[in-house]
Image 1 (tube, rainbow, N blue to C red):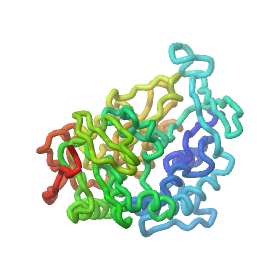
Image 2 (cartoon, rainbow, N blue to C red):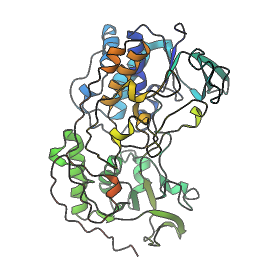
Image 3 (cartoon, rainbow, N blue to C red):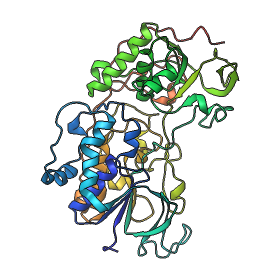
Image 4 (tube, rainbow, N blue to C red):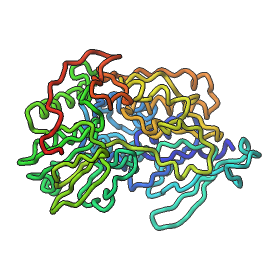
Length: 437
């Protein structure tokens, strides 16, 4: 099967980096991207500025592929999603040329002529990758291996506190957004300005939305947290080894302290009801919030595993991440940003030649950085090339957030979120909004 390509699913930062490493190893890549261009998912959050600086956002093999074309490597600053696409991902896809196919959605992967039940031939038969193009044409491609770098952007978690859509959530879809709003867009700003907006979530996307919405004239922001206390939600501030990430937390904390945000803790949404011109959110214990005009649900993402149903996977039952990787990233244990070195060994699946990488490899765990993905694909490609020594020689040191806390403890009101990284300054906040009842 050495004459067959390795299929890479997704032309985002990690997928394109995988292709660059394959080219460097003399292996033919075939990158399949459902969107219309490189970094299609990144382009959707074009207005958001990254926490990582340019030196951490360019894969070394990709840089070596680009430099002979006259490409100039950015060295300073923190790009937005749009700048990342324009100055790096777009040029990288261009230099890869016909190895990248856009508007091509992968809808299934299997072992040729065998469903997942059949044992015989799984080591000797190639993979078949079933795709559908933008015009509806179906095609079956043959591959020696598959690197799934499709990410999780297309499958955001719902507003419902039990992981399923809340009752009435689908019916209220016209008032609920699952993305960080681009308040610099006049049309988007008009949707939220002067309105009462609920923001659900405790991650960096939620903090970004809080800061952006509080800067709109007349906007009332209600922040809904499922956990029982704010704890370390704002991060480590100056102790964060990614300064831009720490600065975001400080800005969000200041907005709350200044009274520009109502904070409601321990609120797990069970229902969404129409109330006049607004929406009333009801928690699992029957608390009902004063109606809001809009909801921004930023409760994380999950992997889409549907098109891998005929491949043999070994995934953690909690995180839906590779079983060997899950203990290293489980937010129930830690959330410091500290991840032990891992590569092909932890990412491999029982299906020969199949690897989950990038954000997809983290399953439902948060806080994935580009540096992680680049080291993952370097190791995976080395393994596919038969260079076991390089595949096993994995080094990964990630910047810590400066604050930790197991998310499994966040239901407890006394959970402070501090612990394994660095102490944080106590936050004195009013945690129950007057409108809750």
